[in-house]
Length: 329
Image (cartoon, rainbow, N blue to C red):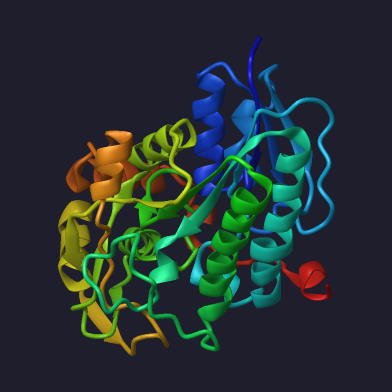
């Protein structure tokens, strides 16, 4: 008998790749999304597949799914600054009310639940690289605090359900991930650089470019999440690529990759933008026997090929998500 899994945020970047993975593994997959930041085209190829079902729903409202559930993956949330700075209250709600609703559903269905946390729980870290034991350095009242604190609360309530109700829970702390299906104008550095290169614009670096990031290709990230779900480990675990690079050096890599002649221009650093981001994946190696396999060179080539395949309309359009209905709530 096949297993059934509910994946929230199914039309998002990671959510849609997770749908692909679990369908390939023979699961009955229920995808849930309210499409506030998700994109129908990410799951269009799944709609004709018999073991995929789509439910359009906002998880901050009561969540009910008919029938048996074995697993829940909670990946519903704005995940880029351009989104959560525009819809801060909704970002907080999906991390709090949405997580509460899904934990309640998992309890009712006796299902195992994995929640998507983030490296942002570490804030602008004072410890480098970041281990799961580090408590973080977060500005609770800064503009990024709505996302950081939503995820930190999400971890706390998940562990409360685990301890008080004995619920089977898993927590993944996701570090910068990239690959096909990223939104070109979502404000994150990889689509921003590649979009600028393809449009013939100069590449914009915020700050002096000495801040660092560590980029994990989506296939590696999905493999880590998959292994964590079926592990026996209930506490947070980092999944990311520990190979660190400065933003300035990364911009130069993009110029070389895209064979463009754009200049690199510098603008002021946004408030609370982390200066360092590098995961310590010792736990993932030990517990999950996982580490990233795809090199940044290969991953970036695949990602650039995806962005090159976009239409001119998609390439040149500005971010136009309409959040009006959600802002009223």
